[in-house]
Image 1: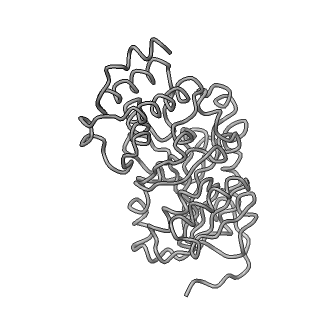
Image 2 (image 1 turned 90 degrees about the horizontal axis):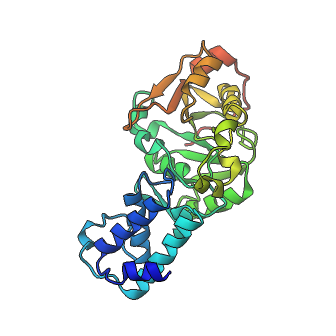
Length: 315
């Protein structure tokens, strides 16, 4: 502690403390990927939080501002928890940002992060010509409810259902749905995949399910063990929940509907498991293809479909 005090006693500006944060996160071998891609991004976020600066704006305009002693102390405490206990920054702040929107988070939910922020709604336009053609959508494995909120904002006339197996996660989702004024449009459902949903079909089924295989679960960085295991583990091969989604989707989709799933690095596993299934892989900015889209027609052809009970369309 004395050495740390000697290191920081000459720090004055946001720029000084930002560099210090980057150094500490790097020195302590912190892992990223829970909303941030590098030490600079995470240090900036924690510093903005410690200094009560707006998180939705860049830090650059404040770089030469002086940091108050109380703010510096707060930042140091956050860094200590982040570097020594490996607690994700989002849990320390009680908030996470996705698609430019703030969501409340804690250890009851996985830290929001998703390639869907790049894809909703722009990459779906060839299936849905205009946003108002999506009248019913469902987010399976909703966690904090962040993707359900993004869906509601992208498709302003849609009725949204959001499903999760965890009542604790749904408590967090309920807060986020309320905070964004969407309680009239988003219904939260507790249960396994399609089981708790009311009868009827959807234009869009979206899911970012747990998909880490067992061998990966045993090698995750320490930060990821702070998250609920059920939000990460996809069973032995990572496909446990994906199988349920593929089996249940045909009877839940409108004829023009689509199922869209974020499955990380499981493309090869899925193409091996279902070689005859015509999957569309949506590219994202980092050059990978972690999101799989399947049409209702393809799912019905491959898996068959039962006739669901009738459900009135939204007026």
